[in-house]
Length: 292
Image 1 (cartoon, rainbow, N blue to C red):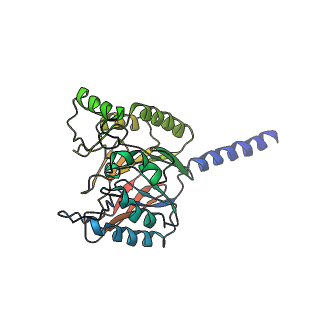
Image 2 (cartoon, rainbow, N blue to C red; image 1 turned 120 degrees about the vertical axis):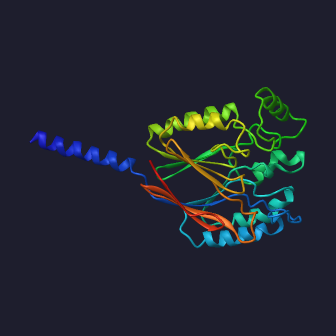
Image 3 (tube, one colour; image 1 turned 90 degrees about the horizontal axis):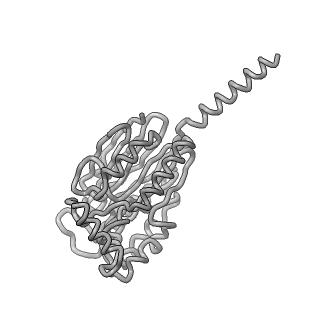
């Protein structure tokens, strides 16, 4: 009889373990490069009407049952006062909403650069949050950069040395994830792997495939991510044309820029056990990315 009860107990443990590792379904809204500013349009970039597209997008998102919304950087094109136009629109979202910092978010006067994350109500420049058994990590690709700090600052001088010593050919309007942030990320990925958390990373800057928009230390970051099977996707903006590649089980998705169109561009992304479903709107593509 004791053997019978032990068998029931063991079966129960096995069922609980299997259930805990099952990927839970979620859906979230994703926007890249609203890049609003009250200035004349330049080519395909419709700066002064971008807030109207954001309004339509938010109106749509508020009709959906979303777990959260992420804007992937460059909420503004320039000028600190531009935040006063687009932030109230974005903050009218019913779902939890987050930001990744873009290079243009820091295209403000030097004295106000330090105030950008606070203005955007960010808990930190890089951080993470959990939904069900998914972990979402927001990276700061401006960590080492020329645009996030005043020109006379130690951080700006460090970026200049970093760029020179490492013989970087990637444009100066990109940036890098710094050493401290990389250590933080590695520790977080180790914990995510141990806890059976599925991971998606968000950043403004792409890292894969090779492209002149990529982070200065893109290879270093990709090498780290590929060490952890819990990582399922890396989603970003910055390259307004969009991009996609899969490598070693990780989906690298660049969403198209909202600013570069008269219509609109954004996505609702649905996560389930088998796939990452990208439902694109406007010029954003529909995609089914299989989870391995």
